[in-house]
Length: 294
Image 1 (tube, rainbow, N blue to C red):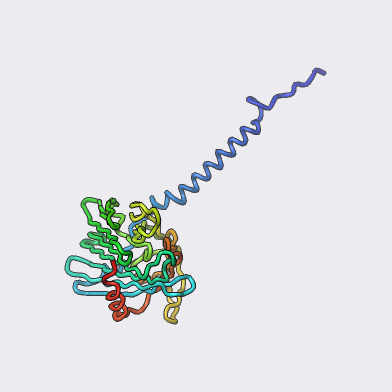
Image 2 (tube, rainbow, N blue to C red):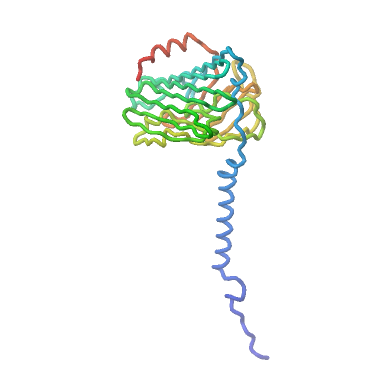
């Protein structure tokens, strides 16, 4: 018998180990990129219209007041927030004042108290027309002003002490606008699986060492209705939608009332935000005490 030829494992034979490693690596990269696409890009493409604000149903001349309590993870009160919603014939105005107590901040910041005033106006449907934010209690002015410019721009001017600048966001993106302390205000007509983009403004950016103007600009996050849960409020069990976004989880009543939010806020840490019975005396007392804090 003649000698048997032994084939080489190489170019024309079976794949070499290196080729198998290359195929496997390519497959892993493809799977990873697909995962990133599904997690980060696809939700933005698939995100729908933001839910209408519950206060849009107010009639001309009607006013609605609400209050929330701000607590840390162990139930210690860190502050209050009040919102007054009022509608004229043509304009819906939403004014909020949030007061954070010294217990909300690390001792090194030496902040006696901090107040954030926000005013939003809507003139048509859900389109935000103007935005004004003022922060008091830092010893220097912090301001942010924005105004809708047709067809789809919302330029914002900011001031922190003697520094000034501006940034522009798409006007459509402001239809769901929150801040780092209170991301959700009111959410009506929710449905399971519903997604939308929420824009978060950070009025506390100036507290960060080495902060930049980009820290104050809005940052988008995808909000999603993930399920239904029961939550206890004032000794009663209430059925609520569960809404989740980046570092935020909220429980929302079918009426659109946000019952509870859990937020990982920059600098402050975890916040538990709970809907409370409105107390106008408490509101007036805190706002008068902080009226001159700039």
